[in-house]
Length: 435
Ligand SMILES: O=C(O)C1=C[C@@H](OP(=O)(O)O)[C@@H](O)[C@H](O)C1
Ligand SMILES: C=C(OP(=O)(O)O)C(=O)O
Image (tube, rainbow, N blue to C red):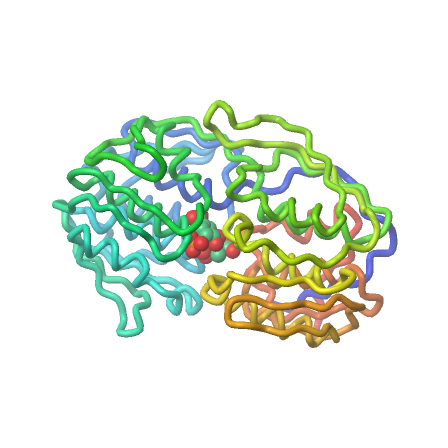
């Protein structure tokens, strides 16, 4: 595909829109629905390359999934109902799809293979192989600990208490999913709380959870109705662009505000941005908290020291935070964010190189970065097929008269297929253009 070209917005951005469905919740709805007895109905599912990989995998394992307008219906297979896939399961670009399904497949009575694209097949998988092995699973990876994963199913897993060295919802969910099939309790603790969608959603499917991330196995799921809110990680780009372009006033509807996901909005406010939130659901019913966000330009942002305890709750928003930091007054410091180096790309490095091309001063450390805000200048940058880096550069381009040309921007569809359309609808300047 041609590079993406983003250039200075000619007028304040304005409008109201509903960002796409939450990717994390959509993956879980597809997997849990496929495992459940009976029918699951999903409203607001994200349809993107990543979630399509999960959907296809569930179908290869025997589930039936049908679309009815905006509603998705999954006829689940029940606890013992999955069948052996006749080919490797291709998870594309999606770490979540691979790591969550590995937990399910480790406990089956058949063997399976999980693979992905070049990015996914270079991401670390020992982080799930270690706890799965402790449960009695047999998963083989390459010598580097990467996919393809050859999973020799073992229906006689045993529950464990896993004290994860990393705050990771993918590790936590992998263990809990395997735990649904295992004998005894499975419990995961982590250095900081990662997104808790699995813990919130399993009870919807009739699973009895223990305190925190814990459950007693074996337990089956029953079909449920899932309402998927808009993805705060996708909304983040719109919040950012409205906070950067003078005079902007943009409203985002139905955005997920789970506290384990919403720290980016706090960071924007700490930088001086203006976000007014109208609560739609405060989450006291145990479901996902949701609200409408009105974002208004509020002057030039200022740099902050990002509190390290906020990082897990905005783990996918660090690239767009770095883009904001590039134009803010003063220094922004990010620490305790080494996880960024093992996402779809080394996000700290890809963002740092791109911002440097735009003339921004910064210094990188193994676990973070200092960005010294300035005036980004026209440049050609490389997003290395990382959707979030590509969208972050496109947001920053809205401040640059002669624009920024973004190579490696073809993977935006993994999380936000409507990104360009949504940006254009509020007045941003974006197009595909010949290099
Ligand atoms: O569980 C999930 O849905 C996700 C967890 C996070 O990954 P880690 O668990 O590796 O932190 C996040 O980066 C990813 O986009 C989605
Ligand atoms: C890290 C991400 O996703 P995943 O780990 O599922 O590939 C992301 O969407 O930013």
